[in-house]
Length: 422
Image (tube, rainbow, N blue to C red):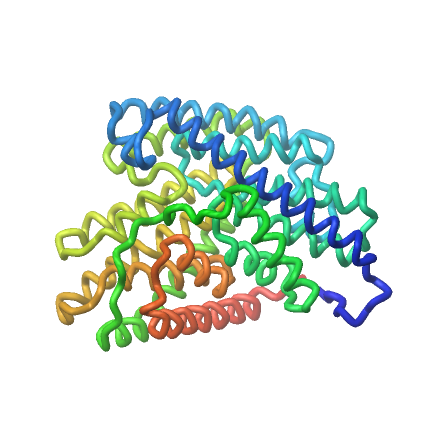
């Protein structure tokens, strides 16, 4: 897709109107991120009680609650999405909105709220799409009222979506890079200053000037020659796994029903996930518990439990999508990458005991997510901002990330060659 350059001034919006759009979009995204974060935590507390983390709250209650509330989540999702798929416009995605489609405000808000509600009740899927969707829809509405050009509307809607992600998790760098790398694929000066301003201001609106605690609690990783060697070997493996996961997600999305069959598939699959959660509660939610299990794995005794948790998370996430649910795979991708990275590091430690398992989990999260999202720079920024760690292992991390992305590109070219378009 051709994106006009900054030199094509005839397609520019007057600067004053663009600045107004930037300010309004940042405020919209900040409020949206704040709202959905608080809604999530409110429902989690109502369902599982008050605790420091979601998984601690889940473990403090009777295991039957996991089945009951996941069955309830399936029923809520089934009713909501069965109705939404039969609205006049149906569900309009962020990508479609960036490319000029109108995102109906009420439908988009209902769609996003459904995602947050089911994740709060324990659905095995990410909730990061919700603030992106509502922020994009409101940004588009704002752009239309201000009369922005098609080029600048596309830019502001993309930046609004990235800022919604940033505000929800307090990750301003990741929000800006996500908008630039994934949504608009542009690094023009105009795109850069808009993305940075909107993302930074949205986090300021949502969180204030004080940086909150990291999303994941991670001990400081250390870099050693054995870690560098591990990164050279693990990078392509993690890239292959991430690419494979993205293909499975696409197949699950293709299987996702849009008919009243949702009233059956969602409650049934969600109840099955609840039964799995009786024995493996870490599969519940957006993946934070699964990732934390990988980041906390420091001894060889953790290898099998982390492997089981990670594989179970992959299965439940894919099953959730195939049953008809909508949501994100960003935080589940981090969870799977951290889990597989930790497992690989633990196995490697039998030969090289000095290796940092935390470093392996961090590199695993970056490499797996970069391949599954097809956005390596966004993955790097996300893991650094989510954990507030990683600066000491940037050399092996970038090597693994580069190798994982290279293998992803190679697999993508082979896939396109064997299945040409048209």
